[in-house]
Image (tube, rainbow, N blue to C red; front, side, top):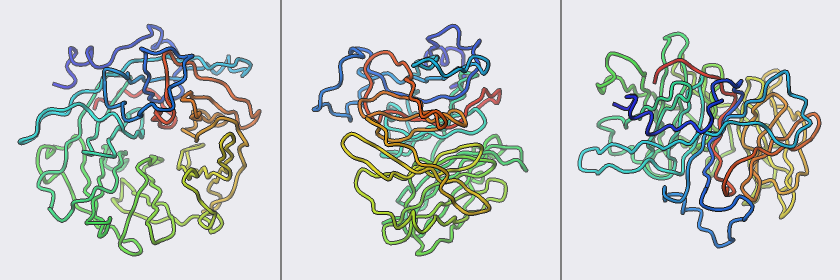
Length: 369
């Protein structure tokens, strides 16, 4: 059984004995290559797809644990707890053999439970509760219609009316057309039955969805950036209590802003509300981006961040005034919105750019998965 103590001891190894004594603030997952020196930068010829080799990289759960009373911001480093995570294998299904959990995944978070999913290959999904050291693999919907051959997106959240967690997966036909959603309620008496998956139609302009896999959960709803090739970028939201989808437009100036291959629009969570971080400058050495917030049902530019040197892109807010950033040499730093000061998150071993999966504000949950 996936929650058996022997399984937990094997797959979640706590590196620090102090982890339970510290005040957890936020977490992120980072691939670290411990067989290389942290001071030795990776070769320009390094193949990032090498991350699929579990013998070379180790997945670390990094929890920033800064006490409120000691937050003077005068140190250059953030205190953190590092836990090694060995992802469970994906069980054999039908004629397929057991295989490792995909290493190139995305992460979201709901009420202390981490939702991890592969967004390139098999769309395998996993729930992880670090506080209880529990894993749960989420299986594919049974008897999926053949015409729904394109996976578009997924999300995990809480239905406050039902008092249950739900998992939504969105499928479509070729080129992401005719999208439909299948919603699964966890912990129901029909959890082993196909009846626990319910089909929900999605009505969008052009009958076409192309979702960014990195979504966020906030106050009973899940949000994705929707960037169809021939339509204007919008936000798609799913209300877990009503089982309904909604389209939220973006400001015209943000939609019409010129984009390059390196530019980005990132959907994150700040002060318990979805925010947009949109790049305005991305050169060889400097990065700048705007922060857009919701005011009176309208998106308003809140502030501009940067220019910052050696920054790749934002990762997630871990406090209301602290934003985690991925650097171009693979490190993770924290940027203070008020003081504009950068602090480093100390990580052992060698790290690589772009290999950070983070969710938003995290607190310990006693809910079993």
